[in-house]
Length: 165
Image (tube, rainbow, N blue to C red):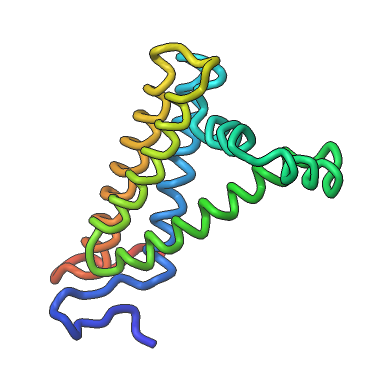
């Protein structure tokens, strides 16, 4: 399998590269959101706000099942499940962005929007809390665009220098 296909005129970046771009951008966004929450309120971390919102929205019978099944590790299992879901979502964002950065940027923006809304709905977060989600979203989208453009310039554009190995 070649690294790029030009069947539709726009060269396609390798899947491993675009998924790496998406996962790295998503991890950066999560880190920025968590860091920003340190300045605007501990409950403002988008990652933890989504987890807490999920717990609040979970029916009692399912919470009881989780506690019976996982014991004191129930929240850890929830957070690991969220991490796996986010990584799968980011991989999909990367795969959909092999020709164009916009699908990945939109998907990261959607993920950030969910985190921001979750922060906004938390009762223990002040008015500045959603800024952590906004900062995370902007960081993730900008990182995705910059890394995707770098990959395209390096691998696709005519006359581009070969990557240093």
